[in-house]
Amino acid sequence: MDLSTRYLGLSLKSPLVMSACPLGLDLDAIRKAEECGAGAVVLPSIFQEDIENEIEEIEHLATLGDSEALSYFPTRLSDNLGPQNYLNLIRKARAAVDMPVIASLNGTSRSGWIDYAQQMEEAGASAIELNVFFLPTDLELTGIEVENRHVDILKAVKQAVSIPVSIKLSPYFSSPGAMVRTLDETGADGFVLFNRFYQPDIDLEELTLQRDLRLSHRGEIRLPLLWIAALSGKVKGSLAATSGVQSAAEVVKYLFAGADVVMTASALIRHGVGHLKVLHDGLVADLTQREASSVADIRGRLSRDKVADQTAFDRVNYIRILRGGRYIA
Ligand SMILES: Cc1cc2nc3c(=O)[nH]c(=O)nc-3n(C[C@H](O)[C@H](O)[C@H](O)COP(=O)(O)O)c2cc1C
Image (tube, rainbow, N blue to C red; front, side):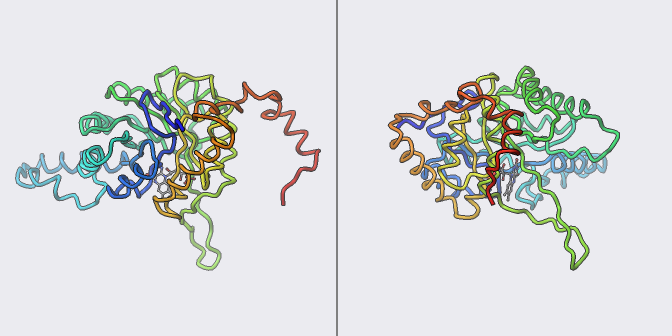
């Protein structure tokens, strides 16, 4: 079975990708992911705030003329996601596996931290996944300003590096398709759809905000599935699906919609990295049963352009569903 795929211009032996999450801090887990059928790994994000804190601290030490402290600076960082340690993680991960290692850079405004992307490239990152996790709770901020911020950050990172750059997006744009197209024209090499937002709940006993992180469930594939199907064949950049993959069925659905790769985090945290083998074997079994000989045979076959009834994706269908009574309890 030929599971090979292209993503961000890179050749992957399989469309299964370990999504950005703490499992990527463990080299054994990365090795195991490759053994179990992953085609690439995305390391957990390094944040703009981490990088800026380090820049500030170095500048502070420099103004104090504390050359001794400066010379020890990288090793003093105990946080295993400090910027220097992150670069080491990239180096070690690249040495540990043959599959591409994608570094993840998470920031919300254009500033000095963008130079760090260059260091990621020098450390051996195969590509950069840019995550602009950003909640516009400032009520002065308009939609166009939020969109421009994405474009500006992408442009700056693209200028800083020569490796491919993908962008992980939120679904909360008034026109997600137009946003993707603009970023495609700006030079994004791929789109990771969608960022999962961690919204707080309220603890009624303690009357505090509850900030726990819920792992995903399979129903969460529907929103990315819709947009991957709508964008398939319409953009130059690759399409990566993220959210809700629990079994091979979700992987197959995302591929039918048009995804080039399918990412998974929650299922691996729940069941262990070895779960990638379950997804891999399930994908092979599904393709075999459909008499397909490769992932390419099914990719995009149910994209918006390819389905006979395009209204299934649109408003007409919405009206039909609301009136038609196909409710699932
Ligand atoms: C514990 C945990 C940590 C995560 N850390 C990151 C991160 O550092 N950067 C990032 O872009 N996404 C991060 N994510 C999001 C995942 O990469 C993924 O996009 C999201 O969980 C949806 O996929 P899933 O349904 O397979 O979990 C994290 C998710 C989890 C559960």
